Image 1 (cartoon, rainbow, N blue to C red):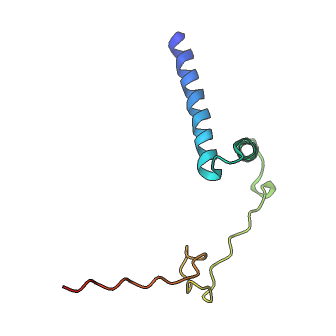
Image 2: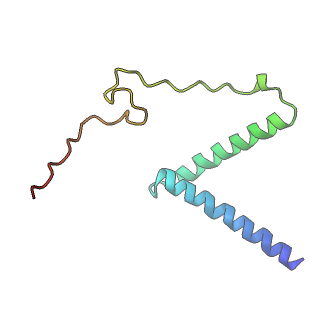
Image 3: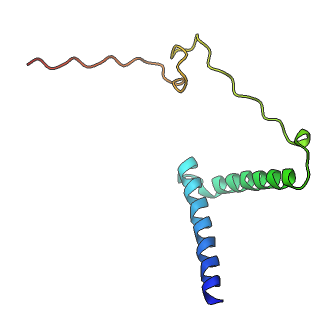
Length: 98
């Protein structure tokens, strides 16, 4: 019984530290408590939506998520996905002479 209690405590600590790591990784150390509340609400919403869908909710009742906007060919990165925010071109450095 004692080993089961120890395992449950270790699992709870792992979940707490993992949650704190996610908050720090995504939001940084500034305004940690506000960011933690935001992530906690997002986690509760996600878990609630999963439970609702498993409890007999039809897919038609689920919230529809709009698809992301595709990258246009006229973007500054010439349509390469993942480079939307790059605004300057880096020229290759000249090779040193031998």
